[in-house]
Amino acid sequence: MPWVALTLKIDAAHAEILSDALLALGALSTDLRDAAAGTEHEQPLFDEPCAPEGSAGSIWPVSELTALFPADTDIASVMCTATQALGLPNPPPCHVTTVEEQDWVRTTQSQFDPIRISSRLWIVPTWHRAPDPAAVNLVLDPGIAFGTGSHPTTQLCLAWLDENLHGEEDVLDYGCGSGILGIAAWKLGARRVIGVDIDAQAIAASRSNAALNRCDAARVTFQAAHAETSNPAHGTQVDVVVANILANPLVMLAPILAQATRPQGRIVLSGILDTQAQEIEHAYRPWFRMSPSGRCEGWVLLAGIKEY
Image 1: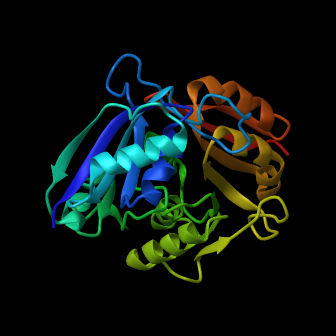
Image 2: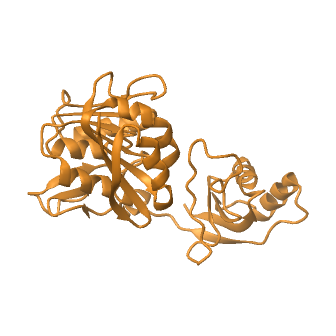
């Protein structure tokens, strides 16, 4: 069955409200993207927890809104009703295209190919054959949890683990997402891996991916955690803490992640823009000797050793 896609440009004040209105009027889905994407005016957004209200990062000045409707929808009537509800004098200019039926599962899968991290480490989606069966292959089922391996921050962490784990380390993967970093640590020789996340869906995805990779359930565990009230390493200290999240949470978590790291243990932090690195280094300086350990596409990985 075909659908119709309604596309229009809308200012920041009305974008999310119009999106909600179209959903209420029968849209199957809506999508907002930067109207200037692909141009020199494109504006990346990194909407972090605890960002100041009204700061850049919430939405673009002008968004391109796309809404998907059943093919028999009266689009003119929908737009008239939606814009009246918003108090706009006239419907914004829009165009409508037909979206033909297709195999959405196959289309989604085609976006994920095996990714080579190093000469011995690969990420392999479940529907692909491993390009190098003799390599350390991370079998991954990309889902809704963050961590498909395609993002530079994840690849920076994986490269660090590949280069720096020597075997028999205890590793904490804080904000485990899909579990990819914890699973990689185990496959690269870690003795024990603890993965924690505040998102129940991330824990479910991590456990599923751990099973795909035949991880030892006694040595690789993924559990929900609330960092504000508990030690994410379950009261123990580990040799390596890796956290691929975002700058604001990393600042807030500094005392807790430091507590989870044993003396002379190492910490690996990612999800940090080049412009944020100095702030993160300052936050961790009371416990760690920190320095940049890798950079990729404007992102930086910081690594440090706990001095006491």
